[in-house]
Image (cartoon, rainbow, N blue to C red; front, side, top):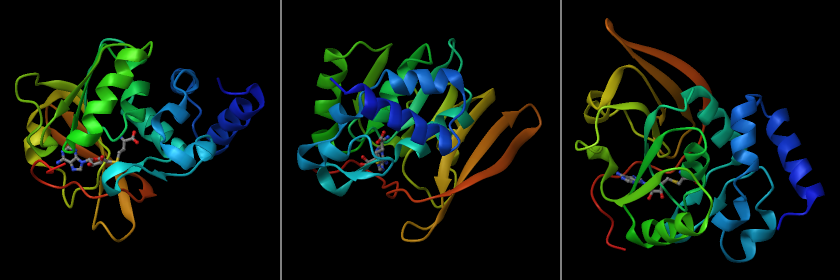
Length: 212
Ligand code: SAH
């Protein structure tokens, strides 16, 4: 249980940081972040900051998750692909907004507990896959929305090919130890349209499966 005061402060911090979409705020209110944070970091679960998780990865900052979700403009009929499950926070939120969510993680040590946690929670359709997200999920393509939660040097063309015409991809791009740009790519009949949204800092998108 989250105490109501903590929840209220958390929701307020999201709004102040530019998360204003009602559906996104509702979805976030329904996903208790402490379930996705481990050990002694749990008491900071409702602070607006990224926190360490297993395998040297991070659970994203809530306001960044909110703004990315907002930028993705997810609809109830959408099939969504997320690359970089981590402990599953972002995917759980997406599951309240989309028809289906597929999320891919290269560390089995993260993918397994996320699968288990999702089974215990009251979520929409969300499936975790252990694998290399840079390859996407050709079997399930095309996707209406694709979200990368790890930074690529360039938008991966394999993933762009798995995006439906009319679809949107949101991802951080840039060198990993520098400030990165969060960009939105819209795939139209005529090609790709790029919009820069924000400055962010994410862990790197790494090719291949991890060995843990
Ligand atoms: N979406 C998460 C953020 C996790 S951090 C959240 O809601 O908090 C980003 C994750 O991307 C890490 O767990 C990292 O292991 C994963 N990742 C990096 N490269 C990947 C790849 N090629 N395929 C799948 N996952 C990848």
